[in-house]
Image 1: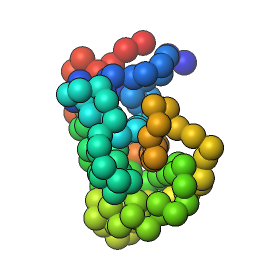
Image 2 (image 1 turned 45 degrees about the vertical axis):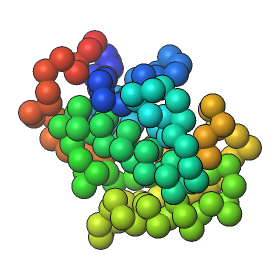
Image 3 (image 1 turned 180 degrees about the vertical axis):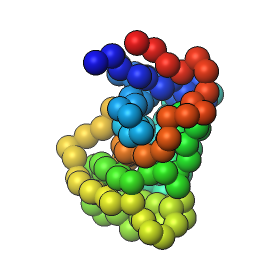
Image 4 (image 1 turned 135 degrees about the vertical axis):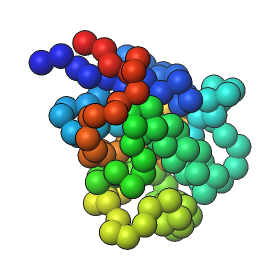
Length: 138
């Protein structure tokens, strides 16, 4: 099976050998996004709430490149370096999703790339019809 990948020009460049997203039928698997500002290539300043907002902007850019939105997300994995940041992350999370909320897993990790405090990966579902041209690659 060939990979149907999504490249989002408005998201930060991948910092390793991975795709922004990969489609399998109507399912889009989004790689984890960290709070990197795509304009500077650096982590955003501020607390975990500010970092979480940037992560969701990055995820939204990948979804948009695939013709989808946050409303199409069905599963989210949140990685925090400190569970003390959960409430602040959760407040931003609640502002970007509407009920019924996606399924979610939140775990604490020992560290994240570039010193980020939060990373979020997601799975979305949506019809493959209407996918913008130029985002498919075998």
